[in-house]
Image (cartoon, rainbow, N blue to C red; front, top):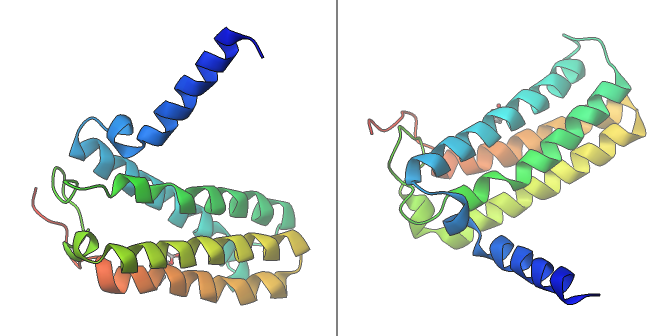
Length: 156
Ligand code: ASC
């Protein structure tokens, strides 16, 4: 590998590992980002949940495509809950997020794992398998909301 390529790669790795600090200039950018990611996640999960409920016709390919989005989105919001992002825009994030980081991270990992199982279920093309995977993923979402999401938005 030549020197220019090596330097470019090293710079890319360094930038990636800068993480949240490099990615968000202001707390409001982080809040907007995580709310957007969670909105997209809920939307694509909802499309498959609607098939599982029978309110929308089952389309195996669409379920699989939507589940891929769910898995991608499940991994994105968390970097945007950095220190100092408790205010800046109206948010339902509870202060406990920054007091109970281990618990918050554990719930993230569980949700990501359920999203991956959910995607695996959509890959079977079997509606009953998908139906069985909707509940556990919804419960993983809810577990975090129960502890870390307020009923109302903050006023800032
Ligand atoms: C959804 C959605 C959530 C979760 C949660 C599960 O479909 O938008 O936030 O499931 O309601 O209890």
